[in-house]
Length: 116
Image 1 (cartoon, rainbow, N blue to C red):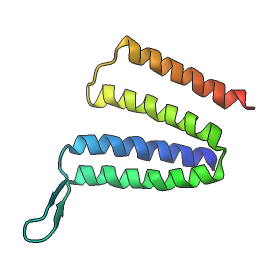
Image 2: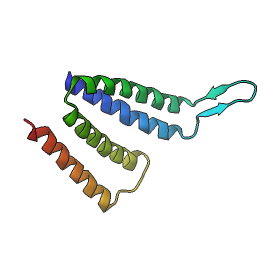
Image 3: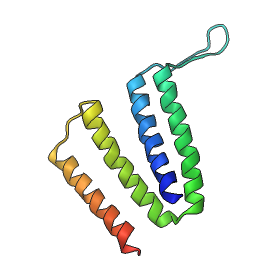
Image 4: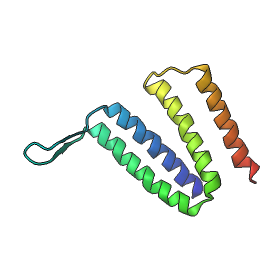
């Protein structure tokens, strides 16, 4: 169950960020003639996924070892976001970001397997 929650969290949090960026600046709030709130579908989907990821995160930090969960999951999110940014948004990768990813992966491996 732990791994299922973690994978769902990773999908929702990275999907949420991706769809919010894809949705661009479609969120608007107006106070003319009362309060109006408009949001594009893609941005809404991003907010929805991010909300689900928050609820999953809340459940995960209650059930599992916080000192392992937070660094491992946060590191994986960082790596996934870097990969998504490169392939979906055509953002450039440089040597510093690749070294950072390598260090994150090494840290995840040390934390995940060093505690067993």
